[in-house]
Amino acid sequence: MSTPAGFWELRLYEMLPRRLPDMHHQFAYEIPPLFARAGVPAPLAFWECHAGPMTATLAYLLRWSSLDERMAAWGRFYSDPQWWKQYEDAHGGAQMLERSHVLMLKASPAWHPEIGERLPADGLHELRMVDLHAGEAAAAHQAFAQVDLACVCGHGAQVLGLFDLAIGHGLPQAVSLLVWPDGPTREAAWSAHAEDGAVRDARARERAAHGMPLVGSSAAFLLRPAPYGPPRGALL
Image 1: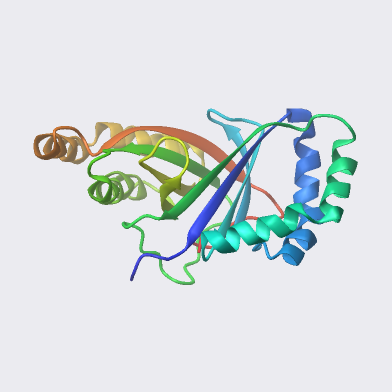
Image 2 (image 1 turned 90 degrees about the vertical axis):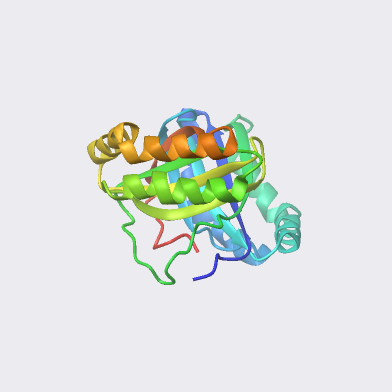
């Protein structure tokens, strides 16, 4: 199967913890009609980040056919007077957001999901951002998928999505979204990965062939799917 086309937009809102429920309420009830009116596609999933470099964070993922479609839709959304009324009503003159991050993604060349693939919507989800060898990005994506993800999938992970960071800080990076049955399974899988001789051998071969490993350090975020927007399969 070919690599999916288009762009994915991952938006991360670092919230003041006491205001996170207010933001959930907005996305569950108030913002969807405005998105539909502006032509912003229905998000593929919503999450709350509860462990990692950014806690008290709301995350959601959109898919666009093109960057032009994205720019036009967001322009309509932010020019909608109803949005600004809702914004003022929700904030009430007080701060809600510490900062926001917008990452533009393309499908990794190593991601070939099954159309209509059913994956569990519950469990523990993991966003993992992985540094790649700058001069060998395509080969690094394949190495991450075929070595690292293959290892942890053999220990209980399932892949919701695998992406290439197209626009954002820290290029080049692979961005993976995984689902686990529970925390202990995840911890055991990544421990097994760290001790796996096949993974170490692959890194040694990469170092010999490319002067450095293709896959570098990573940052992981643990996510809970929001009740109003869990993923319903591969993030297509």
